[in-house]
Length: 457
Ligand code: 2HG
Ligand code: ZN
Image 1 (cartoon, rainbow, N blue to C red):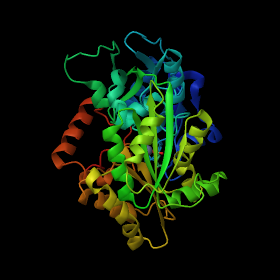
Image 2 (cartoon, rainbow, N blue to C red):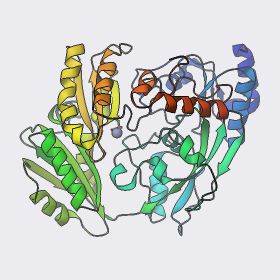
Image 3 (cartoon, helix red, strand yellow):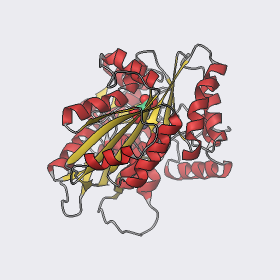
Image 4 (cartoon, rainbow, N blue to C red):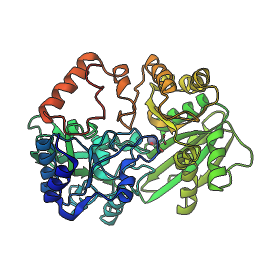
Protein backbone atom coordinates (compact mmCIF):
# COMPACT_ATOMS: atom_id res chain seq x y z
CA UNK A 1 0.00 0.00 0.00
CA UNK A 2 1.13 3.55 -0.75
CA UNK A 3 2.41 5.80 2.02
CA UNK A 4 0.08 8.31 3.71
CA UNK A 5 1.94 11.09 1.97
CA UNK A 6 1.34 9.62 -1.48
CA UNK A 7 -2.33 8.93 -0.69
CA UNK A 8 -2.89 12.50 0.45
CA UNK A 9 -1.07 13.99 -2.56
CA UNK A 10 -2.91 11.86 -5.08
CA UNK A 11 -6.34 12.49 -3.52
CA UNK A 12 -5.56 16.18 -3.40
CA UNK A 13 -5.14 16.07 -7.18
CA UNK A 14 -8.76 14.82 -7.40
CA UNK A 15 -10.61 17.00 -4.87
CA UNK A 16 -8.21 19.90 -4.24
CA UNK A 17 -9.04 21.86 -1.08
CA UNK A 18 -11.86 19.44 -0.23
CA UNK A 19 -9.30 17.08 1.23
CA UNK A 20 -9.20 17.33 5.02
CA UNK A 21 -6.25 16.26 7.13
CA UNK A 22 -6.78 18.55 10.13
CA UNK A 23 -7.09 16.19 13.13
CA UNK A 24 -9.76 18.25 14.90
CA UNK A 25 -12.00 18.45 11.85
CA UNK A 26 -11.44 14.79 11.00
CA UNK A 27 -12.61 13.68 14.45
CA UNK A 28 -16.29 14.17 13.61
CA UNK A 29 -15.92 11.80 10.63
CA UNK A 30 -14.08 9.01 12.41
CA UNK A 31 -16.44 8.27 15.31
CA UNK A 32 -20.02 7.12 14.89
CA UNK A 33 -23.05 8.82 16.41
CA UNK A 34 -23.21 6.51 19.43
CA UNK A 35 -19.54 6.81 20.26
CA UNK A 36 -19.23 3.00 20.20
CA UNK A 37 -17.45 2.69 16.85
CA UNK A 38 -14.53 4.66 15.57
CA UNK A 39 -11.00 4.57 14.26
CA UNK A 40 -8.59 6.72 12.36
CA UNK A 41 -8.08 7.86 8.79
CA UNK A 42 -5.34 9.39 6.74
CA UNK A 43 -7.77 11.87 5.15
CA UNK A 44 -11.40 12.82 4.59
CA UNK A 45 -12.31 13.72 0.99
CA UNK A 46 -15.42 15.70 0.12
CA UNK A 47 -15.95 15.42 -3.64
CA UNK A 48 -18.40 17.85 -5.23
CA UNK A 49 -19.42 15.79 -8.27
CA UNK A 50 -19.95 12.22 -9.40
CA UNK A 51 -16.82 12.51 -11.57
CA UNK A 52 -14.78 13.40 -8.50
CA UNK A 53 -16.26 10.45 -6.58
CA UNK A 54 -15.20 8.19 -9.46
CA UNK A 55 -11.76 9.84 -9.39
CA UNK A 56 -11.41 9.11 -5.68
CA UNK A 57 -12.42 5.46 -6.16
CA UNK A 58 -10.01 5.00 -9.07
CA UNK A 59 -7.18 6.59 -7.12
CA UNK A 60 -7.83 4.46 -4.04
CA UNK A 61 -8.01 1.36 -6.22
CA UNK A 62 -4.74 2.17 -7.90
CA UNK A 63 -3.01 2.86 -4.56
CA UNK A 64 -4.49 -0.23 -2.89
CA UNK A 65 -6.21 1.77 -0.15
CA UNK A 66 -9.75 1.13 1.01
CA UNK A 67 -12.39 3.80 1.60
CA UNK A 68 -15.49 4.22 3.71
CA UNK A 69 -18.37 6.17 2.16
CA UNK A 70 -20.16 8.43 4.64
CA UNK A 71 -23.36 10.49 4.49
CA UNK A 72 -24.72 12.24 7.59
CA UNK A 73 -22.85 9.84 9.91
CA UNK A 74 -26.08 8.85 11.62
CA UNK A 75 -25.49 5.10 11.18
CA UNK A 76 -25.71 2.94 14.29
CA UNK A 77 -23.77 -0.18 13.31
CA UNK A 78 -20.27 1.13 12.66
CA UNK A 79 -20.69 0.88 8.88
CA UNK A 80 -19.87 4.50 8.06
CA UNK A 81 -16.66 5.19 9.97
CA UNK A 82 -13.08 4.14 9.23
CA UNK A 83 -12.06 1.38 11.63
CA UNK A 84 -8.66 0.53 10.20
CA UNK A 85 -7.28 3.67 8.57
CA UNK A 86 -9.54 3.75 5.49
CA UNK A 87 -10.01 7.02 3.60
CA UNK A 88 -13.36 8.64 4.45
CA UNK A 89 -15.33 9.65 1.37
CA UNK A 90 -17.99 12.13 2.50
CA UNK A 91 -20.87 12.55 0.08
CA UNK A 92 -22.41 15.53 1.87
CA UNK A 93 -21.48 18.04 -0.83
CA UNK A 94 -23.60 16.27 -3.46
CA UNK A 95 -26.53 18.56 -2.75
CA UNK A 96 -28.37 18.78 -6.09
CA UNK A 97 -32.13 18.49 -5.69
CA UNK A 98 -34.85 18.34 -8.32
CA UNK A 99 -36.44 19.59 -10.39
CA UNK A 100 -39.56 17.77 -9.24
CA UNK A 101 -41.58 16.06 -11.93
CA UNK A 102 -44.97 17.12 -10.56
CA UNK A 103 -46.82 14.96 -13.09
CA UNK A 104 -45.07 11.73 -12.20
CA UNK A 105 -44.50 12.69 -8.55
CA UNK A 106 -40.76 12.07 -8.63
CA UNK A 107 -37.48 13.82 -8.09
CA UNK A 108 -33.78 13.19 -8.35
CA UNK A 109 -31.76 13.99 -5.25
CA UNK A 110 -28.01 14.06 -4.77
CA UNK A 111 -26.53 11.72 -2.17
CA UNK A 112 -25.81 14.58 0.25
CA UNK A 113 -29.36 15.96 0.42
CA UNK A 114 -30.74 15.55 3.94
CA UNK A 115 -34.06 13.88 4.56
CA UNK A 116 -35.46 17.15 5.96
CA UNK A 117 -34.48 19.02 2.77
CA UNK A 118 -36.10 16.28 0.73
CA UNK A 119 -39.33 16.56 2.76
CA UNK A 120 -39.34 20.34 2.28
CA UNK A 121 -38.82 20.09 -1.48
CA UNK A 122 -41.56 17.48 -1.87
CA UNK A 123 -43.99 19.54 0.23
CA UNK A 124 -43.28 22.71 -1.76
CA UNK A 125 -44.39 20.85 -4.90
CA UNK A 126 -47.61 19.52 -3.33
CA UNK A 127 -46.22 16.03 -2.71
CA UNK A 128 -44.60 14.19 0.19
CA UNK A 129 -41.73 11.72 0.60
CA UNK A 130 -42.76 8.37 2.09
CA UNK A 131 -39.82 7.68 4.41
CA UNK A 132 -39.34 9.46 7.71
CA UNK A 133 -36.94 8.94 10.61
CA UNK A 134 -35.80 10.71 13.74
CA UNK A 135 -32.37 11.67 12.36
CA UNK A 136 -34.01 13.49 9.41
CA UNK A 137 -31.94 16.68 9.83
CA UNK A 138 -28.64 14.85 9.32
CA UNK A 139 -29.44 11.59 7.50
CA UNK A 140 -28.74 11.87 3.78
CA UNK A 141 -30.25 10.34 0.66
CA UNK A 142 -27.04 8.44 -0.13
CA UNK A 143 -26.85 6.92 3.34
CA UNK A 144 -30.54 6.08 3.37
CA UNK A 145 -30.28 4.31 0.02
CA UNK A 146 -27.06 2.53 1.01
CA UNK A 147 -28.69 1.17 4.17
CA UNK A 148 -32.24 0.83 2.81
CA UNK A 149 -33.45 3.02 5.67
CA UNK A 150 -36.85 2.18 7.12
CA UNK A 151 -38.17 4.46 9.85
CA UNK A 152 -41.63 5.24 11.09
CA UNK A 153 -43.77 5.13 7.91
CA UNK A 154 -42.79 1.75 6.53
CA UNK A 155 -46.16 0.21 7.30
CA UNK A 156 -47.79 2.62 4.86
CA UNK A 157 -45.18 3.41 2.20
CA UNK A 158 -42.51 0.73 2.53
CA UNK A 159 -38.76 1.14 3.05
CA UNK A 160 -36.31 3.22 0.98
CA UNK A 161 -36.04 0.48 -1.65
CA UNK A 162 -39.77 0.85 -2.27
CA UNK A 163 -39.29 4.56 -3.11
CA UNK A 164 -36.32 3.97 -5.42
CA UNK A 165 -36.98 4.31 -9.15
CA UNK A 166 -33.41 4.79 -10.28
CA UNK A 167 -29.88 5.33 -9.16
CA UNK A 168 -26.56 6.83 -10.06
CA UNK A 169 -23.59 5.15 -8.39
CA UNK A 170 -19.86 4.58 -8.70
CA UNK A 171 -18.81 0.93 -8.63
CA UNK A 172 -15.65 -0.33 -6.97
CA UNK A 173 -14.08 -0.44 -10.43
CA UNK A 174 -14.50 3.33 -10.69
CA UNK A 175 -17.13 3.13 -13.44
CA UNK A 176 -20.34 5.11 -13.12
CA UNK A 177 -23.72 3.42 -13.55
CA UNK A 178 -26.62 5.78 -14.05
CA UNK A 179 -30.30 5.04 -14.63
CA UNK A 180 -32.33 8.03 -13.47
CA UNK A 181 -35.12 8.19 -16.09
CA UNK A 182 -37.77 7.34 -13.51
CA UNK A 183 -39.93 5.07 -15.66
CA UNK A 184 -42.23 3.27 -13.27
CA UNK A 185 -42.37 0.22 -15.52
CA UNK A 186 -38.93 -0.63 -16.82
CA UNK A 187 -38.08 -4.31 -17.16
CA UNK A 188 -34.74 -4.08 -18.87
CA UNK A 189 -32.53 -6.41 -16.93
CA UNK A 190 -30.98 -6.58 -13.52
CA UNK A 191 -32.38 -4.06 -11.05
CA UNK A 192 -29.16 -2.42 -9.94
CA UNK A 193 -30.92 0.14 -7.67
CA UNK A 194 -32.52 -2.71 -5.73
CA UNK A 195 -29.16 -4.46 -5.42
CA UNK A 196 -27.14 -1.42 -4.39
CA UNK A 197 -29.86 -0.29 -1.96
CA UNK A 198 -29.06 -1.95 1.36
CA UNK A 199 -25.57 -3.04 0.26
CA UNK A 200 -24.06 -0.59 2.78
CA UNK A 201 -21.51 0.90 0.42
CA UNK A 202 -19.86 -2.45 -0.26
CA UNK A 203 -20.80 -2.70 -3.95
CA UNK A 204 -21.09 0.90 -5.10
CA UNK A 205 -21.17 4.46 -3.82
CA UNK A 206 -24.54 6.11 -4.32
CA UNK A 207 -24.22 9.60 -5.80
CA UNK A 208 -27.88 10.32 -6.69
CA UNK A 209 -31.27 8.66 -6.47
CA UNK A 210 -34.53 8.94 -8.39
CA UNK A 211 -37.28 8.83 -5.79
CA UNK A 212 -40.99 8.26 -5.88
CA UNK A 213 -43.17 10.77 -4.01
CA UNK A 214 -46.49 10.09 -2.28
CA UNK A 215 -49.61 12.25 -1.93
CA UNK A 216 -49.36 15.01 0.68
CA UNK A 217 -51.89 14.51 3.49
CA UNK A 218 -53.16 17.80 4.93
CA UNK A 219 -54.82 16.34 8.05
CA UNK A 220 -52.95 14.53 10.79
CA UNK A 221 -53.84 13.10 14.18
CA UNK A 222 -51.43 11.58 16.66
CA UNK A 223 -52.44 9.61 19.73
CA UNK A 224 -50.54 7.87 22.49
CA UNK A 225 -52.44 4.96 24.02
CA UNK A 226 -51.49 3.19 27.24
CA UNK A 227 -51.80 -0.58 27.77
CA UNK A 228 -51.16 -3.06 30.59
CA UNK A 229 -49.07 -5.46 28.46
CA UNK A 230 -46.99 -5.56 25.27
CA UNK A 231 -49.32 -8.20 23.94
CA UNK A 232 -52.35 -5.89 24.34
CA UNK A 233 -50.51 -3.07 22.58
CA UNK A 234 -49.53 -5.34 19.70
CA UNK A 235 -53.11 -6.64 19.37
CA UNK A 236 -54.22 -3.01 19.11
CA UNK A 237 -51.58 -2.37 16.47
CA UNK A 238 -52.92 -5.24 14.34
CA UNK A 239 -56.46 -3.99 14.74
CA UNK A 240 -55.45 -0.43 13.69
CA UNK A 241 -53.58 -1.75 10.66
CA UNK A 242 -56.61 -3.76 9.61
CA UNK A 243 -59.22 -1.04 10.07
CA UNK A 244 -57.43 2.24 9.33
CA UNK A 245 -56.14 2.71 5.77
CA UNK A 246 -54.84 6.17 6.76
CA UNK A 247 -52.59 4.71 9.47
CA UNK A 248 -49.09 6.08 8.92
CA UNK A 249 -47.19 5.03 12.03
CA UNK A 250 -47.62 2.69 14.96
CA UNK A 251 -44.77 2.90 17.45
CA UNK A 252 -44.12 1.11 20.71
CA UNK A 253 -42.31 2.17 23.87
CA UNK A 254 -42.34 1.15 27.53
CA UNK A 255 -42.69 2.91 30.87
CA UNK A 256 -38.94 2.75 31.63
CA UNK A 257 -38.13 4.41 28.28
CA UNK A 258 -40.69 7.17 28.80
CA UNK A 259 -39.36 7.82 32.27
CA UNK A 260 -35.79 8.12 30.95
CA UNK A 261 -36.87 10.42 28.09
CA UNK A 262 -38.70 12.67 30.55
CA UNK A 263 -35.78 12.84 32.94
CA UNK A 264 -33.27 13.63 30.16
CA UNK A 265 -35.40 16.12 28.21
CA UNK A 266 -37.24 17.70 31.13
CA UNK A 267 -40.59 16.92 29.47
CA UNK A 268 -43.56 15.94 31.61
CA UNK A 269 -45.19 12.58 30.99
CA UNK A 270 -48.35 12.83 28.86
CA UNK A 271 -50.22 10.79 31.49
CA UNK A 272 -50.75 11.57 35.17
CA UNK A 273 -50.02 7.92 36.11
CA UNK A 274 -47.33 5.71 34.58
CA UNK A 275 -48.48 2.73 32.50
CA UNK A 276 -46.50 -0.34 31.45
CA UNK A 277 -46.71 0.01 27.65
CA UNK A 278 -47.43 2.79 25.15
CA UNK A 279 -48.40 2.84 21.49
CA UNK A 280 -48.01 6.01 19.45
CA UNK A 281 -50.35 6.04 16.48
CA UNK A 282 -50.35 8.54 13.63
CA UNK A 283 -53.08 8.93 11.01
CA UNK A 284 -52.73 11.15 7.93
CA UNK A 285 -55.52 11.73 5.45
CA UNK A 286 -57.27 14.11 3.04
CA UNK A 287 -59.94 14.76 5.70
CA UNK A 288 -59.68 14.90 9.50
CA UNK A 289 -58.97 11.32 10.66
CA UNK A 290 -59.58 11.99 14.38
CA UNK A 291 -63.06 10.50 14.48
CA UNK A 292 -61.99 7.34 12.64
CA UNK A 293 -59.15 6.91 15.13
CA UNK A 294 -61.50 7.45 18.10
CA UNK A 295 -63.90 4.81 16.76
CA UNK A 296 -61.11 2.32 16.14
CA UNK A 297 -59.79 2.98 19.67
CA UNK A 298 -63.25 2.38 21.18
CA UNK A 299 -63.30 -1.10 19.73
CA UNK A 300 -59.95 -2.03 21.29
CA UNK A 301 -59.60 -3.88 24.60
CA UNK A 302 -57.41 -2.94 27.56
CA UNK A 303 -56.78 0.71 26.68
CA UNK A 304 -55.84 2.30 30.02
CA UNK A 305 -55.59 5.90 28.85
CA UNK A 306 -55.27 7.99 25.67
CA UNK A 307 -53.95 11.40 24.71
CA UNK A 308 -54.73 12.84 21.29
CA UNK A 309 -53.18 15.73 19.36
CA UNK A 310 -54.12 17.37 16.09
CA UNK A 311 -52.21 20.65 16.15
CA UNK A 312 -48.64 20.66 14.91
CA UNK A 313 -46.80 21.52 18.12
CA UNK A 314 -48.67 19.05 20.33
CA UNK A 315 -48.23 16.32 17.72
CA UNK A 316 -44.50 17.04 17.67
CA UNK A 317 -44.43 16.81 21.46
CA UNK A 318 -46.08 13.39 21.43
CA UNK A 319 -43.61 12.20 18.79
CA UNK A 320 -40.74 13.43 20.92
CA UNK A 321 -41.59 10.93 23.66
CA UNK A 322 -40.83 8.20 21.14
CA UNK A 323 -38.10 9.77 19.02
CA UNK A 324 -36.01 11.05 21.95
CA UNK A 325 -35.35 7.48 23.13
CA UNK A 326 -32.12 7.30 21.10
CA UNK A 327 -30.54 10.46 22.50
CA UNK A 328 -31.82 9.74 26.04
CA UNK A 329 -30.24 6.27 26.07
CA UNK A 330 -26.97 7.69 24.73
CA UNK A 331 -26.63 9.85 27.84
CA UNK A 332 -25.96 6.60 29.75
CA UNK A 333 -22.84 5.87 27.66
CA UNK A 334 -22.44 4.16 24.27
CA UNK A 335 -25.19 1.53 24.09
CA UNK A 336 -25.18 -1.78 22.25
CA UNK A 337 -27.88 -1.45 19.60
CA UNK A 338 -29.65 -4.50 18.31
CA UNK A 339 -32.18 -3.50 15.69
CA UNK A 340 -34.17 -6.63 14.88
CA UNK A 341 -37.45 -7.79 13.34
CA UNK A 342 -39.58 -10.62 14.60
CA UNK A 343 -42.52 -12.38 13.03
CA UNK A 344 -45.49 -10.46 14.46
CA UNK A 345 -46.80 -13.59 16.17
CA UNK A 346 -43.60 -13.88 18.24
CA UNK A 347 -42.91 -10.22 18.93
CA UNK A 348 -44.65 -9.99 22.33
CA UNK A 349 -42.94 -13.11 23.67
CA UNK A 350 -39.56 -11.90 22.35
CA UNK A 351 -39.98 -8.51 24.05
CA UNK A 352 -40.92 -10.23 27.30
CA UNK A 353 -37.88 -12.53 27.15
CA UNK A 354 -35.12 -10.12 26.09
CA UNK A 355 -34.52 -8.42 29.48
CA UNK A 356 -34.02 -11.81 31.17
CA UNK A 357 -31.68 -12.96 28.37
CA UNK A 358 -29.58 -9.83 28.91
CA UNK A 359 -29.69 -10.16 32.71
CA UNK A 360 -28.38 -13.73 32.58
CA UNK A 361 -25.31 -12.56 30.64
CA UNK A 362 -24.75 -9.11 32.15
CA UNK A 363 -26.65 -8.62 35.43
CA UNK A 364 -25.70 -4.93 35.75
CA UNK A 365 -26.71 -3.93 32.22
CA UNK A 366 -30.04 -2.24 31.43
CA UNK A 367 -32.30 -3.16 28.54
CA UNK A 368 -34.39 -0.62 26.65
CA UNK A 369 -37.03 -1.72 24.17
CA UNK A 370 -38.89 0.43 21.69
CA UNK A 371 -39.59 0.44 18.00
CA UNK A 372 -41.93 0.14 15.08
CA UNK A 373 -44.78 -2.08 16.28
CA UNK A 374 -46.53 -1.89 12.93
CA UNK A 375 -43.82 -3.82 11.10
CA UNK A 376 -42.39 -6.07 13.83
CA UNK A 377 -39.18 -4.05 14.26
CA UNK A 378 -37.95 -3.64 17.81
CA UNK A 379 -34.83 -1.71 18.86
CA UNK A 380 -33.13 -3.59 21.66
CA UNK A 381 -30.73 -1.14 23.30
CA UNK A 382 -28.48 -2.29 26.13
CA UNK A 383 -26.62 0.22 28.28
CA UNK A 384 -23.90 -0.38 30.84
CA UNK A 385 -21.79 -2.78 28.72
CA UNK A 386 -18.15 -2.36 27.65
CA UNK A 387 -18.17 -1.29 23.95
CA UNK A 388 -16.28 -4.36 22.73
CA UNK A 389 -17.86 -7.04 24.88
CA UNK A 390 -20.39 -8.66 22.55
CA UNK A 391 -21.70 -11.53 24.67
CA UNK A 392 -25.05 -9.79 25.10
CA UNK A 393 -25.22 -9.12 21.36
CA UNK A 394 -24.61 -12.81 20.80
CA UNK A 395 -27.32 -13.90 23.26
CA UNK A 396 -29.95 -11.51 21.91
CA UNK A 397 -29.23 -12.18 18.24
CA UNK A 398 -29.42 -15.93 18.83
CA UNK A 399 -32.77 -15.44 20.53
CA UNK A 400 -33.94 -13.48 17.48
CA UNK A 401 -32.85 -16.32 15.21
CA UNK A 402 -34.61 -18.89 17.42
CA UNK A 403 -37.83 -16.95 16.92
CA UNK A 404 -37.35 -16.84 13.13
CA UNK A 405 -36.53 -13.11 13.10
CA UNK A 406 -33.93 -11.05 11.28
CA UNK A 407 -30.78 -9.74 13.02
CA UNK A 408 -31.13 -6.40 11.23
CA UNK A 409 -34.44 -4.73 10.46
CA UNK A 410 -33.40 -1.31 9.21
CA UNK A 411 -29.97 -0.23 10.49
CA UNK A 412 -27.97 -2.75 8.47
CA UNK A 413 -25.21 -5.16 9.43
CA UNK A 414 -22.29 -2.73 9.37
CA UNK A 415 -19.27 -3.80 11.38
CA UNK A 416 -21.36 -4.52 14.46
CA UNK A 417 -23.22 -7.61 13.25
CA UNK A 418 -21.16 -9.08 10.43
CA UNK A 419 -20.07 -12.09 12.45
CA UNK A 420 -23.72 -13.03 13.01
CA UNK A 421 -24.85 -12.68 9.39
CA UNK A 422 -25.11 -16.47 9.19
CA UNK A 423 -28.01 -16.34 11.67
CA UNK A 424 -30.14 -14.64 9.02
CA UNK A 425 -28.51 -15.78 5.75
CA UNK A 426 -27.56 -19.26 4.50
CA UNK A 427 -24.01 -20.18 3.51
CA UNK A 428 -25.10 -20.22 -0.14
CA UNK A 429 -26.57 -16.73 0.16
CA UNK A 430 -23.36 -15.41 1.73
CA UNK A 431 -21.34 -17.07 -1.06
CA UNK A 432 -23.57 -15.32 -3.63
CA UNK A 433 -23.00 -12.02 -1.77
CA UNK A 434 -19.23 -12.54 -2.02
CA UNK A 435 -19.49 -13.30 -5.75
CA UNK A 436 -21.38 -10.04 -6.31
CA UNK A 437 -18.87 -8.15 -4.21
CA UNK A 438 -15.95 -9.51 -6.26
CA UNK A 439 -17.72 -8.61 -9.51
CA UNK A 440 -18.52 -4.99 -8.62
CA UNK A 441 -15.57 -4.25 -6.33
CA UNK A 442 -12.82 -6.63 -7.48
CA UNK A 443 -10.07 -5.09 -5.34
CA UNK A 444 -12.14 -4.70 -2.18
CA UNK A 445 -11.86 -0.92 -2.12
CA UNK A 446 -15.39 -0.21 -0.86
CA UNK A 447 -16.31 -0.31 2.83
CA UNK A 448 -14.29 -3.41 3.75
CA UNK A 449 -15.52 -3.58 7.37
CA UNK A 450 -19.23 -3.67 6.63
CA UNK A 451 -21.77 -6.40 6.00
CA UNK A 452 -19.80 -9.43 4.78
CA UNK A 453 -18.27 -11.58 7.52
CA UNK A 454 -14.46 -11.44 7.63
CA UNK A 455 -12.91 -13.77 5.01
CA UNK A 456 -12.72 -17.34 6.13
CA UNK A 457 -15.50 -17.08 8.70
C1 2HG B 1 -35.49 4.84 15.71
O1 2HG B 1 -36.41 4.10 15.36
C2 2HG B 1 -34.14 4.67 15.10
O2 2HG B 1 -35.68 5.78 16.50
C3 2HG B 1 -33.02 4.54 16.15
O3 2HG B 1 -34.12 3.59 14.24
C4 2HG B 1 -33.18 3.34 17.03
O4 2HG B 1 -31.67 4.19 18.67
C5 2HG B 1 -32.14 3.18 18.14
O5 2HG B 1 -31.82 2.04 18.50
ZN1 ZN C 1 -36.06 2.66 13.98
